Image (cartoon, rainbow, N blue to C red):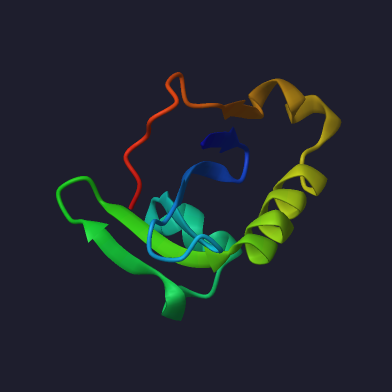
Length: 91
């Protein structure tokens, strides 16, 4: 799932190994706005892509925080894209 908001642009992927674990991908700047930088790790250097593992509860709290921080003038900037296909590649 892709999320675009004033807080940043993120992609959330469910891991295969642990169904309660989600990988949140984004830029360093966007991830450290919300999460502790000690938990953030480099995923792809050439794309400057970073990630953080969250349990589903933490991810729900993260999404709740993003929604609560949206100013009513910014609602048009908030977007959640669902995958267009059923069989996704999972991390």
